[in-house]
Image (cartoon, rainbow, N blue to C red; front, side):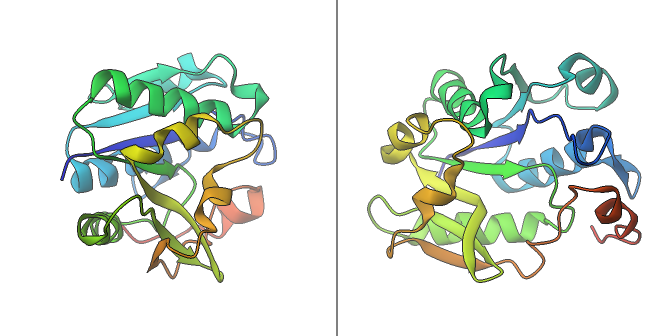
Length: 196
């Protein structure tokens, strides 16, 4: 089953005080790591959506092997990055049967978890989304079928994809460390020894 990944990496990381995309963990930036595990799971069809400080991030992170797109409206909220990424998937990878949405600040994410999402998606029927489950809720990384791309592109402002994952029919795959993220200097300080 053909899937395309969309890495949402346009935010300004204001609470962290530095671009989280460029934070290094175990020798690679969070952006490089997210791209790597996405490519291990879905192959070469990975779109990276940049925004704030995009020139610096594109220069300092090794993501030349991806499709890079700059969201000039990133300050209006994450929905603009989702729309931008999905539109790019439609244009560059029309064969994609679904889109895998990811963010860069989940350092415990593994290719194995993403492959588990992809396997659940391949066996699901109809217009079913497959989401990661952590802290009792369904969230991203998540896969949406092509039939729901219109819903993703209709999102506005700071409305992410989580609202679309509240349906009873959403397939949930446990991601025990999905709640570990990097939003503040304290989060970053706790990252030492993050596993691959």
